[in-house]
Image (cartoon, rainbow, N blue to C red; front, side, top):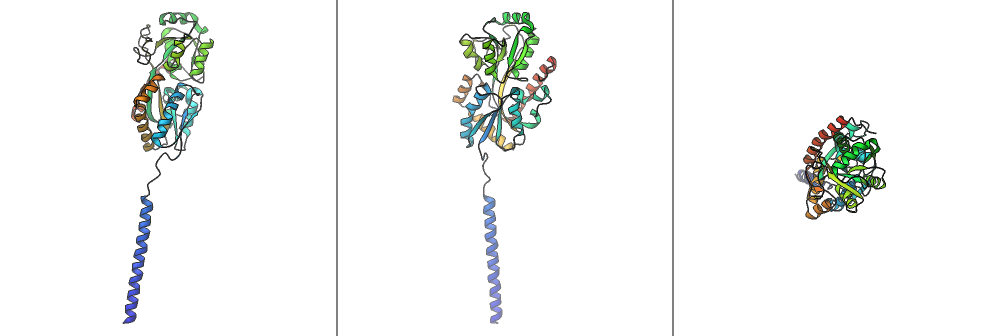
Length: 335
């Protein structure tokens, strides 16, 4: 009887030990499973700009970097990869697989890059994900100081000059390039295209006499125009702009129906998880709509947009249609 009782008690003790051990293992497993996943971003973010330091996209990127770093809790490092109208930088973003690379891009990088040049090493619609449309602006038809300052007189001079005139742009496929081709068709010009790495070099070309005209962002043109070194002839907007209310539109100068905008936006590799894209978009939207940030971008020649990814996707779609029409009509190809 005692032996039976002892055996019975031993078995009960073993059972309780097994249950206790199982409970400990389950509790430990539950604790491990309950540990939260690392909050993204887990390392510094890279913001690639496909244009040189001092260019309009570069200035925007550097304006956004610090507040974006504060919002996401990681440093934001600007990396300039200039060339091919920003497409070298855009390709680097499209091919990035580190989960922490973004790009500050212009219209052409996200719309017609592949259409204009089939050899472009990325497809903007297949390899890049929209994050946020940051800001928009009209362009300024800018002329060298030796040329007429008024639109009608400049149009007439350009017709007489033929191929003796050249125009500059920050690269093949940029809005400045396509816009000038559209303007040439409308104004009867034959000016020759000279691509540069970025708009600062375009301005230097105008100042040195290497080129005669260009379409440029207001923020870069106006200091030179106010100093009397270049002529700000007219805007590519339907009417006057709050950015530079003293400058008439090209419509006022007689170029009816000529309306064009540049914009900059943040995009990500298509492989970036949607939750991460939404997190960046939310932060950027909040940042650019702050009064002090709105003023900073305005001073650089931009009007704030600050959209969700869906808003940028819609703008890409509409601008692709407009730019594609110009490319086909002018039979443009990458040089």
